[in-house]
Image (cartoon, rainbow, N blue to C red; front, top):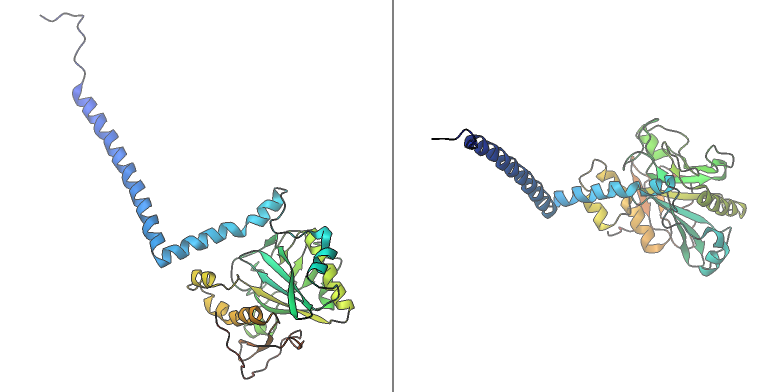
Length: 305
C-alpha cells in the first residue's frame, strides 16, 4: 500500500525531451564552429582566400592614423620635426633643392625627396593623417575619391590661406584624367586631418612640407612632380590587388614606380594614346619637372617588377 507521503516518481519522458533539446543545441553550435574554422582554414590555403584576408587587414590598417589623431595619439612614423636642420645635414641635403613627392594610399604615407649631389635622396616619409574614398582613381566631382596618377605643382597652386591650414593643389584633373572625361577640382595636400578627396596631413607635418616646397620655389625651381599611387607596388601588393577593377590602371603606373626605384630620378612622363608613358631620365636631367604633354616617344627601358 502506497503512503500519501511518498514522493511521486519524476516525469521521466519530460527529462528525456529536455535532454534531447540540449544535445541538439550543442551539436548545432559545434557544427557552426567547425564550419567557420574549416572555411577560414581552407580560405587561407587558397590564393583567393589569402587575397581576401590580406585586403581585409589592409582596410583596418588604412584607418589607423586617423583613429590615432582622433584619440590625441602621435602618428607613427612622424619625423623629428623640431630637428629639421640636423636631419638635412645628416643626409647631405639643403633647403632650396629641387623636390619630388610620392604618395601611397594603402600605407598612408607621403615621401618627400630632395635632389642631392647624386640624384634624389629620401628626406622624410610623413604619415598621411586622412584620405578619402577607396583604392582607385578619382572619376568625377563629388565622388570623394583621392586621386591617383602623375601630377605637377607650380607655385600658383600653393595656398597659404587655405581653410585647412596650408595647402597645394595637385592639379587634378591632368591631361590623362581629362582624356577620360574625369572631373573634379581643388584636390589638395593640406593640413587639418580632414578629407573629402584630398590628402590631409597634421598641421605640424604640413608646416614642414610647406616650408621645404616654398624654399625650393624661391631657389628658382618652378615646378615639382607628385606620383600618387594606390600602394607601394611590391610583389605582395600587386598579387593581392591583381583581380580588382583598377588592376590594369595600376599596372600602367608601375613603370613609374620601378624606374624611380632603380635610378632615384623621376622618369620623364608623357601621355600617348590616352595612356601614361614613362622613360628613364638621367641624374643630370631635370625634364621630369614639366607639365604633362601628349607625346608618343620610343621607349628606351622596360623596368622589371
